Figure 1 (cartoon, rainbow, N blue to C red):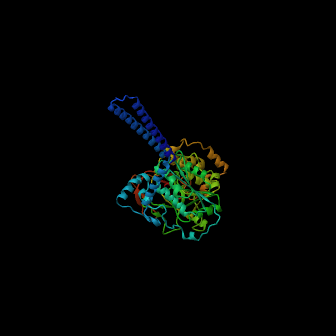
Figure 2 (figure 1 turned 120 degrees about the horizontal axis):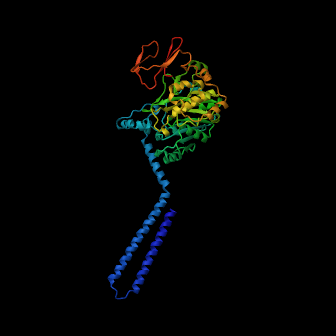
Figure 3 (figure 1 turned 30 degrees about the vertical axis):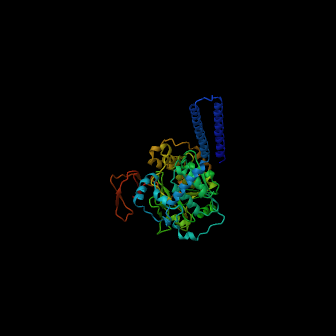
Length: 521
């Protein structure tokens, strides 16, 4: 405002000065001109001068307008924020109250359904429906009823929830943040650290900053990375920034069930070297139904792996059910999916955090799983902590360089942690033999420094049920059927037939007892 007044002051002075000069000039001309001068000549000169005055006045007005425009540009943030506010309010008006409450499925109709189907190819989930569901929808209590009888200490450690995203859809990201805020005790949630891995979506720029400042408490912080680093390094950046006693990593498309945080913090207080995962329920990518086993709340699965280097879900072994004693007690898990887990912050660094030479995404979850178990820690599923997760059918973001990051990262893990069993991985991925996978010196030295146990110990003590195709077998190989594949759920039922996908043929081995082991390994 002061700048505008100053501009007007100088403009008015220049115009006034010009008018005075013109008046004096006319006066001098009238004095010097003979009395018998023609009136029309005098009038002509006045007209010319007046035109010059008008031209100069317009030029001064143009300059003043530019000066005022400059002052408006300098105050533009307020105008941009008005735009952000309008966009956010429009977004809020799109929300349908109680839509999707209690995790019920929502089926879109008509043009909305067509638009949702089209955008599925971009977002990998139903963004049209996501934009309509409120940020703070109510979820069903999917926990085992026995969880309600558990009590937790009053002096639990605080948690920093770290959420990494890159070009995440606005509604799924904001819903994740609101869900964590609403579902976590205020005194236990130290902060939410959002790590932006160099997103370029417009709504994730200034609008996100404005939303956090005007809609959310200050404990929600945003850390922006100036270049794309990938999930692994972005999580490392978030962990370095965090100040809570416990790190809780979540994906950017989750919703938490009530009392999800306390069981994790309680167990870490009891055992700081325990790395914990909640039961991960499915949020349907098309209907946003919160899916869990309603008929058997005791049922859940733990993590396993295949020799091709992929995570898989497996049932809780009977021996582990007997060891834990209660269906809601911490349950040992050979591996973890990697997207959602809690770990004591100092222990995260002591145990080796992540392999920072791994690129983007892939293999880091198995690497951490094996390392934790082999180096003195434990990996456990906490049945009374449940979190819903949208499992997308593909990654809606690019992998820098177009590299096979999962394969190369997994090869790094195999070379450090699998010892003589690494040959089983290369049976599936011979293309990675001799491939440049980077320097392993730091990770090998870490293994020595922590005095970690060999992988054979892991197989014998942590995952004794893991099928090893080269041990106690007489033959090993692949069976490929071109057409229909005979399959049977059990020996008591007739074989069924299914189409052969042809992507990864199942393997079969014959053991000395004449028993055949069939399945993808």
